[in-house]
Image (cartoon, rainbow, N blue to C red; front, side, top):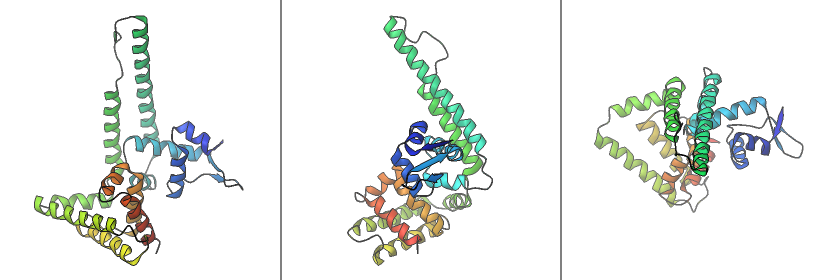
Length: 246
């Protein structure tokens, strides 16, 4: 089996642009490129994409998904089984909504049927699955190191650390008129890497590169960084990419 990028996007409910982005950051490469440059995806790629979509539904950042899928002890079967359970719940919820519409059209008593699946049921399942995934695979060495360090910080120390981080973000925003690879900007990337290593966990270039991808791949981080200047998240991501490529 081999599907085009548009067929793959429709089948899994993602956009073609999203698949292009996953290719760019190395999260999901197409199985085949035609001579004309068209992307095609085989069964193995679709299986991996299903897992990515599932973890995105659980609000995992792209960098964590990439790290998770690359772990030697990662087993895709539980993730796919949980995705199936979630899809069943979503289908039941749609059936519930259809029944509500039918009752309304037919003049019947609304929600007269029992055992309805609600949106709250789906959200509860997502939280449960996310907790299970984090417990099974999500606690990396960096995660454990960060937990240990922050457990020892006082509230005053935490506030000072956050203030230092905000100063770095503001400095990036102030340099957006320069190229991401400019010496001053690259010095800021080093400053940010040193900040993470000093206060959170040992930040290797590999980890830093993943963070840079997350700043533009996860809307929550993009929104936070762009508060210091519109486009700051993208600028930091590009600066980090240039730094890590050296």
